[in-house]
Length: 348
Image 1 (tube, helix red, strand yellow):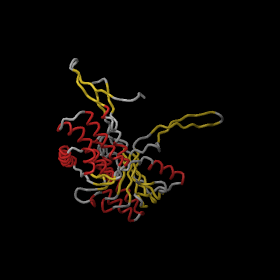
Image 2 (tube, helix red, strand yellow):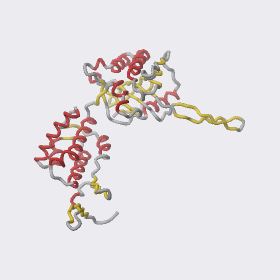
Image 3 (cartoon, one colour):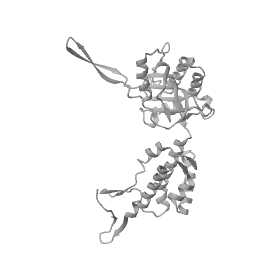
Image 4 (spheres, rainbow, N blue to C red):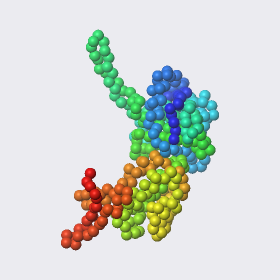
C-alpha cells in the first residue's frame, strides 16, 4: 500500500503529444513549469486521486529491462532530478511512437517529480506520467453592474484523470514498483498506455498471488469440477462459498490447508492439482502454495464469487455460507420437473 498524504510536487514539465498515425507531432514546452502553491495542490489532487488500486507492476523487456525506454529515462531522473526536462522530452517521443491507434487522442502530457512518497513502509521519491485526452465544458458566470453573463469554456476536469502512472524509486533491480490508471480506451486493441508505452507486467506480490489463486478456484469450481464429477449446483455453490470464506478468515494462504478444508475429497484434490498445472501453462502465470493474503483482492473478488442457482427464467436461488443443508433437490414424476425444497425458520 502506498500513502500520498505527505507527497510533495517538486518539479513538472508539460508537452503536447499527438497521434502519430495522423502526423500530429509533438509540441515541446521550452522549459519546466513554475507553479504557485494553490495550483500545486490542485494538480496533486488531479494527478493522485484516481490511484486507489493496490495492484502493482514492474517494467520489463523480453530481452533486458534496460531496453525498456521508460525504465531507462526514469532511472536517469532518479539519479539526478535536474534531468527531468530532457528526459521528459525523450519519454514524450517514445509515447508519440506508440500513439498509432486511430482511437488515440492528442493530449497534454505531464512528467512530474514527487518526493515523500510512502510505499510498503519506505519513503521514496517517485515519477509521475500523466496524459489528459478529454476536455469537459464548463460554464463561467460573469457579474457586471448587477447583470449576469454566461459563457462556456473547454477545460480539464481535475476530478477525471484519463491516464496516469506512478513510478516509485524502489526495487530498481526488478523494474521499479509501478502503479497505473487508464480510464480511456478500454478496448484491448487500444491499450497502448500499459502495453506499448509503459510495457509493464504485474508484480509478483500478495495481490498477484491472491488474485491468481482465487481465479484458479473459481475456474475449477464453475467449469472443470462439474465436467469431471457428478455434483449438484447446490454443492458447487457451497464449495464456492467455502473458498471465499477461507480467504476472508485467513491472513496467510496455504494450499494444502485449503485443499483439506475446502475441497476435502482426495480424488477431487488430485483432479484440482492436475487442473492447476494446465491453468498455469495456459495463462502463463505461477501459482504460489503459500503467501500473505491481500484483503483488497478478496473484497473485490467476493463480489463475483456469487453462488446463484438459476432455475429456468423464473427463479434465482442465492446460496450463502452453510445454507446447503437447508436446501434439498427432488424430482416430481407426475409433472416431469425438478424442484428444490427450502427449510427456514422465518421470513425477513
